[in-house]
Length: 287
Image 1 (cartoon, one colour):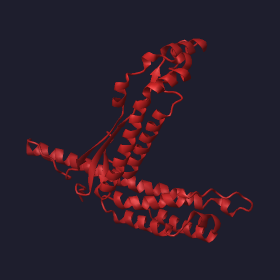
Image 2: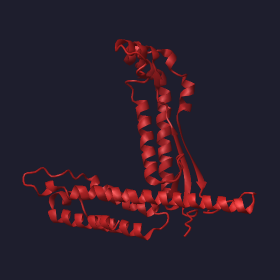
Image 3: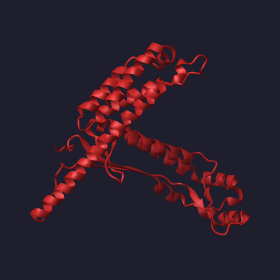
Image 4: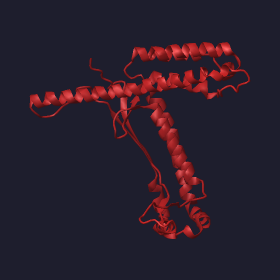
């Protein structure tokens, strides 16, 4: 049966670019090859133009955080980076992305403001590696950073409109339909995979034999052990774009199993740990 998700999700392209501030130093690369007596260019030495400073690292770290968050909030769709954003998560996503946009712009503006001082500090930190010619003009720096997104409606499955012969149209419609359904299946497979990975991690931790060994150091159960599980059950409510009843059943079962459980209860009360292990293992077996 054909599944259409045109009303339950949109396509989203998130683009983040950040200046690397890396520069190939050919002279040093040649010196290293010469010192090591290589017979050919064996490697390249790339220097960090802002070595010893924190402003660029903060922007890069934030960019990584945003990318990871984006992947968690969406589902895969195409090889070029386009993702599926469920409509049930749309406004929450937009609100958080706006906050990230503000943080990103603020950090970039701070870096641009500090740029002349950062060059002076880099001159001190880099020593003989420093070359003023490596540094772009300050007016070009801000353009090296970008955070933008594009939202595109998901077309109906089988929506193929071209002015061509009926026989060719039918062939292309069939190809499009097959590809469309494959992408939907891949997206849902990602949602299932997240749940399976979480369940495997939980079972592995809860079933660790060290729990039953005398004088053995018990496995670490961090506060995030339960928190991450509950966060996933909440997110899967949105990521279940086809309303798969089996996924919803597994999600609900995990949510109920974790309800009221605190990490210290797992660490200190064996019967709680054993009950949770049994319930989580049961969900995993059903998958």
